Length: 232
Image 1 (cartoon, one colour):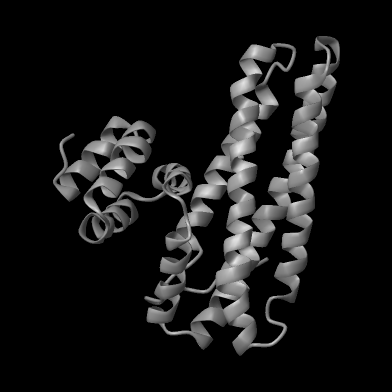
Image 2 (spheres, rainbow, N blue to C red):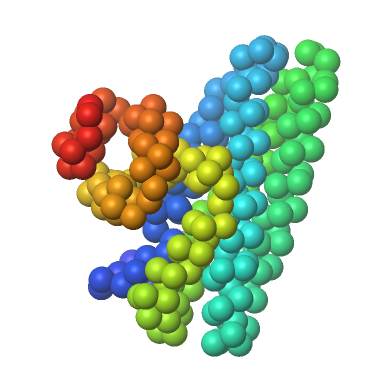
């Protein structure tokens, strides 16, 4: 891999950037937590396993969104353009099922078996994260330029709006909890500033109160409040 393979945005609409930032941050933080967890302590590891389940659920949803809203339109314009990605998605879905089986095995195991099973889960999730980082790199360096060559920015924005429109309010908040802390301050202000203008007031307020405020540092939330004219 070389820097020459990484395309510049050059002002083009980026479908992948923010959600991938959120997934990378969440996965790497979970990986660190799994590595330091004491699986002999069932009460202490229960929130960790719940958070891992949430990431697996959101990852599966993300794949489904890409399959329907990105791959299908791209295939209609460039035949066989998403074959590799589809195979990778199939591998991811298999990994999600295997990881869920490992989580359940830990929850049901006697205490003296949990440490060994926790180590297996940690290593398996490490492998998954490695593959997913490579997968996201391919989407950002190969698939994104294909999208830019075959779709206008208005069409790409329409694809993103269709994905957002397919989400339940609960799942939208879950994705926002991943993405908002992973963004730069300017990206955060642009995304939420647009939402403030275009989204229903109660939906915007929910994102601020349940996704932004609890998951940003005080300094970052003060910066966002200043940019958007919010109560800090």
